Length: 483
Ligand code: ZN
Image (cartoon, rainbow, N blue to C red; front, side, top):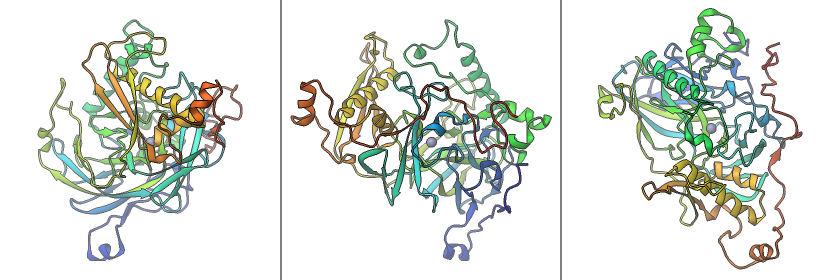
């Protein structure tokens, strides 16, 4: 079990009675963001594995509320230094609440999950966006912006603003970055096999070509017992060295990518009123969720990432018996399916956008073939360099594009040799007109000087020369050396 925390708050199971309706939605799973992740009760998990037992059960049609801590488990602080982002312990992410069992669900069914409501956790209304250090996490543009940076956001009802990015304010489109059903053992083995095969290509001539235009990052995050939290099976803080725990921790999948079970898909529009249809791979479906975002840009380009926050979800589940047959199987196994979803009715309304184009030609001027990732990278770079002319640092715009409601599109994928990607930024998020026009910005450019920066800037590292040392200062021991 985890190290001792304060008195346990046991999972309460709502029953949909009249009393519950009068009092509001019953919290099924609660968190306390003032506690460390391994002290939460019921226990959290940060890996996918079929043996992680459910911590609560819901009936079909029951409305229930789930609270979640932020994806780093409180490692990032609301302050003006990016040292916490630089030295973040990424073996611990993402912290998930659940699993929640729906007893009627069996493998082969579809679990219909309705997102009835969601928001920041009351009393914890702030969020952060960061860029990871190149050598501890990296990001989409880590070859251009290798340092750790951070912007903290204050929530004002539906709006947010940041003391680290002046002159910007926008409404949030709140969503869970991560929600999914538990994998079966067979599905877990499929993930581990294919991701290990990809990682094995690293440094060989079979290595995927994307890596020739993107800065080197891990090709995939394979299972890693370090930092693993397995719910009621116990946490790394107390269980490392226990053979039964070690076995599960060594094969449990990391939560980093989206996969067949949903997971960390980071879809910014998965907000209030959406309905997701998840494939069921284990009895009870075992639904888990976390990584709440106040707002996110398409692509979540900085990787640290959206406006990250703690939060709550109010959900309702039902089961479509045998419904997995509706999901097309594309691949060698009947498990090669993906969730589908319906979009909700409530989104902020933006009518004017400035749209940046990108093509699959890299920064050295080399032509690539229909590479959509490179095209998107160019669109994002074009946007950063353009908007930084209006008084921002390039790092501020990089942070902003990761978390503001910008729309990324794959506009063309057949016109050889160039894929065309676009990035559309709503004009109303700025308190100045950033459209191309005559005036101060063009005059400054013509004179060869840059326009005066708005202040203050994004939070930066206190010692940019020092290498990152991934650690969580709240652990009772030094995480890298475990002493
Ligand atoms: Zn996130």
